[in-house]
Image (cartoon, rainbow, N blue to C red; front, side):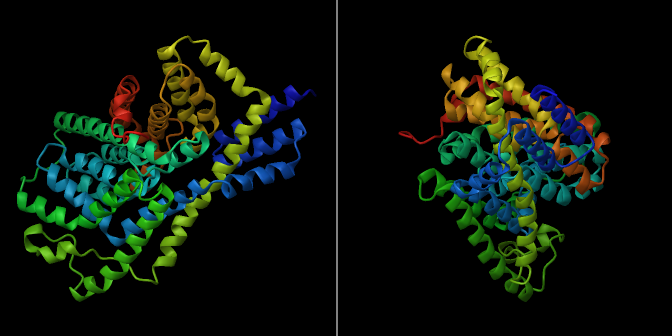
Length: 454
């Protein structure tokens, strides 16, 4: 058989594996190994390429550190305090708990940088509360899934780190560029939640009490400090994103260790007591965690990093093999043939959207970004702006069937079957698509916060 026949058969075979539920890492790995044999590439070169991804990529060290940060924030009780603050601010509105869930996703994303961690953490905390509060369980699960999309847009972002590494762009600028689009995504989804809940009469309202807002704000002070520490350090250039991740991990560990003994001395006050029965001192201290708990927290983070790291490596090698096959020239020629600025921009967005429907954001980024970004730049799209456009599109793929990673995560933590929550993701999907188009058409939304002279 000819090489073309082998390539077709191997590609069909791994597609079948993907449809049968084989992990994406293995699917891409099988394809890489099969292509290596067909093209006569020594497997030792593949092994070297896999190793080089991490030995040459200092910026990628931030990825496991930010994953660990999210787990530390969750275990220490800081994530719960952030969600309590969001509910105190928004609970007086129809759909307030749904909007608080989305707001909590935005706040948690500003520390963890992960979509799946954001969906799992906020979904597991607030889904039961939403169901008890009179919300449809399918809508509640869909809200957690949609809220998780901002996990890779609001800085710090794991996928921005990968994008900056691949395209040799300043990761700190990418982080800053994601602030306004991420906030717009949260705002648009809150509007959807308000409209849907108003039409269906879902949710019990609470009074807007400034005492409650103040106390929950005090209770969330550690979360606000962690967010401010990351953004201040990166924005001012005091430390790189990788260093910011290390500093944040250190901060979370210190807070966890110091808080636990104080929490015990206070008699382990319940987080479920009414706010007016709790003194300000109780809000100042979180439950924390002890040194003996740290290995289990670290192991959980390592398991997630252990899934993502090989996926990054094999996707990079896949991108290299696609270059050998001439895929870059084919896709590049197609996109360039569309014409000028807007034609190239919207064609690129369409490609990202379709790819995001069937692949996780990491392989989409690693495979397509090196192809599409130079083409977009050649027609006048600013590189950092295109990075934001690209990754907002990739984030939308998290709630777009048939793949929709956040949908699977939300289904897993809430117990709502995957296909039952799809209906309520549609309004969120349209709101995110609207924001995506606006971000693409208004470059200043991505670049206005980048410090002058960068």
